Image 1 (cartoon, helix red, strand yellow):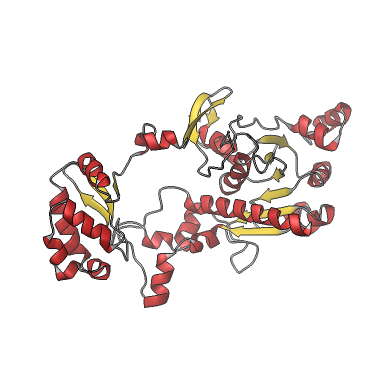
Image 2 (image 1 turned 30 degrees about the vertical axis):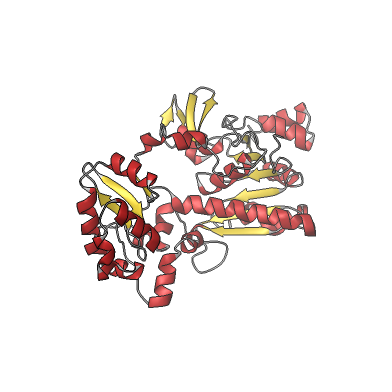
Length: 398
């Protein structure tokens, strides 16, 4: 059984750069047909983002593989009519323009739901379709700053530090995919579509978890703590003879196990470390004791020894280490794909494993601008070659 659960779903995808394309990549991995609408001249902005392989953006390839590209001039009346006809044939419309852009084009939700009442219209923007910030421009760094996550990231009293990946864009893409699939499920009951409104800013607030709980419960403004956890100890990065080891003792039992396997039962008798609350309160003293223990062996030695004894720990891997990690290989989390003109490259695999799904990602190549325009207009709209050529001659499509 190699069927993917979204094989029957067609998505008209106006998204570009990261948040929206990440969302539709997730849908593509689950079998959805993604029809990517691009500008005929330049296409998706991220086609110009490095790094490049033989002139092709590895960034673009990594999140647009397996999609089909149709290039349409949305500033032309004929181009808008083509899109409206396509909306009748699809299940989902996805876009990540600034609020109001699709309305100016005549393609807002109120218009499209009249054309196709069953369509799911998903919009991913910086601040959403409502609220005083709605029309503001936003990038990942903006919502990381405004959404609170940068205020708790980095070392105490250090300069502001962004999370090392574009977590504002990526969480919006993930929440977008979640919203779309939820709306599709609801449509099987009601037969009606919905609008899915996802904001990057909202996503940052949604993932603050412990920080929100701490402020609500204690009226305490969370601050950067480096690698340690605000309410669990020991839970952080500890010095070894050649670097650092991540260790996480999330309960009293694990703390007891650690003390016994490193032959330091005396730590269990110290009043300052009797409970998790006390260990958290006295975390600096605790860290000093653990550093004194772990500095006697290498990170690799401690990692192997403590894991065998049931103490959760890990090295801090640089990205290159992932390419040889046996767990990454076993879970197919780095997958080799072929891109015409660029050759073979490794991309991230699909973290969602479904039984019976043989191909976990959409491993077809990322498309050239307008590569599938003719095929889509012929197959979905039934246009003749003469009609398609006429649109091409007028520069309405590519």
